Each structure stands twice: as structure tokens, then as C-alpha cells.
Length: 154
Image (tube, rainbow, N blue to C red; front, side):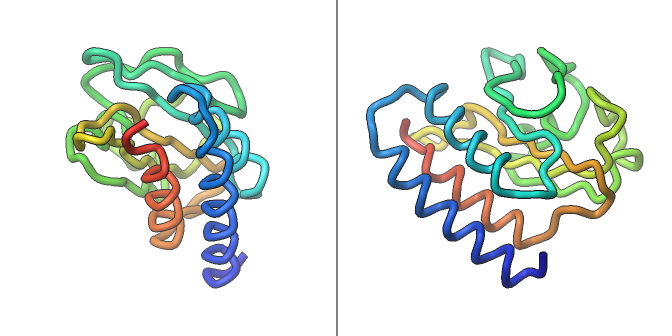
């Protein structure tokens, strides 16, 4: 899928999610909806889900794809780096990321996007893995950041 097609798909997904997320539901329910839509509509997504920040722990769920690490090591990994830096991170080759946590050896590339509450605090990260190298780019970053903003203030 070229960048123009990908951008169009993200825009359509964002519009669909905007409508779906208007309905009542808690944050877990809304994250489940986001996960289901993204995982079903983006062919390069191998694992799609959230790690929720509970205290100082990153806890899995909701997600779709292979079984995930239930709790991530608090001192390493792409998700923790995303929380520490408070910015999205694209990893073209996870084997080259220092401290990468391999929950599934088939994961080859990854993008992680912070999810903020209405006060700007990180409450979770959206984590997407691909079973192919170099699957994510700035178009994915922009599209996913737009989508997670729909969860702000929930």
C-alpha cells in the first residue's frame, strides 16, 4: 500500500472510530473498538493493542493477535521508551532496538504511540507490531496519533 492509499485508509478509519467512540463506554471498551478496527483493516498489522499504564506497570490489553507479554519489564522495551520520551517511536527492525522485549519472535518492526488523558498524562500506549521489517513510517505515525487522540479525555 503506498503512502496516499495508507493515508486515505487512516482517515476513513478515524472517521469510523469517531462515530463509534461517541457512544457510551469506558476506556477499555473504547480501546477494544480501536484495536478491532485497526487490526481488521490494516493488513501489515501482526499484533495490535494497548499496554495500559497502571501505577508504574505496563499491563497488556485489550489487544488482537498472538498472545502478548502480560506485564512489560519496567526498565526496557519500546513501550517503556515511548512512555519515558512521551512521543511515538517507530522501530524499523526490533532486533536493533536496545532492550527490545520479544513477546513473539515473529515480530520484526514496531510502532508505539502514547495515549493521553484530558490532562495530558499518559494512560496507555498503542503498540502495533508487524511480521515484516520496515513496515511503519511517518504516515503510520500521523494516522495512529490522530486515532489515539480520539481517546483523549475518556
